[in-house]
Length: 338
Image 1 (cartoon, rainbow, N blue to C red):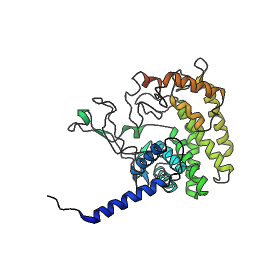
Image 2 (cartoon, one colour):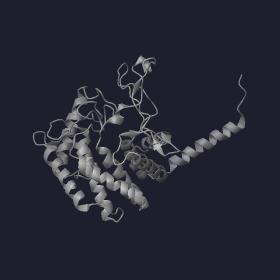
Image 3 (tube, rainbow, N blue to C red):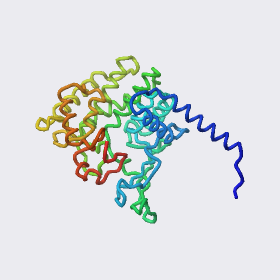
């Protein structure tokens, strides 16, 4: 028999439980589903890497989206998009220390590749994440292949510029100051967006196919310039080419309003000039591009609910995944439902 571990372990366990209770008690949220929100916050905290402040997408690899299927991706990395959304959520919940650590890690990681941003990094800010299959291993319920690394590292996802810059604005709203090097880096990101916003990319759902002109990617390029101009107007970001950024800001907005809207569907759509719905068009309101009460957004919401809705609060991410084709070749942290 194993000997009793004694009172020391009991005290340590009590201290651990008390620490987590106090941490959860700091949450400022008091709205609907508070218990579920706190549980989600605890999960996010558990996925953080304390030495760097990074947060992984999930602590797993090769778990199948469908048992027996081959959509078994490695999620043990830090997606810039996920990090930006998480920082915003943590700021909103009152977990400022964790949120600021996320933003600091993000700024550190992106300095290593600027002005280009990678889709994902490891917890140290490196990007040696080459995807490899391990045929000698069996996955969950014999689902194969088992993978390590993720090929999304080589994709172009232009939306990450808007995600990173918007996360910095939440940091600025709290701290108020950016050092000279960070300001320089943000200006470089803005210049990169001006040069590349009109190009096709792989988008946030990360299909391993042909690049296209996705409305969501175009939106986040607009967000990038919009937030840079906002920080400049508030005296928090100096030296940006205001006229150049403003021109491209307007050009992107016109492009979305013109080609991102489908008159026949009466909705914003997934690809500029296309006819496929996508749940991400609802983020036009989230990011301040349009008011939720506007006629276009009201029509868009109705179309998305009609075509992609699947129960209270759930949406298929796009028209392709609704019919079972959208997951083929997916490599990132996107599931079938949004």
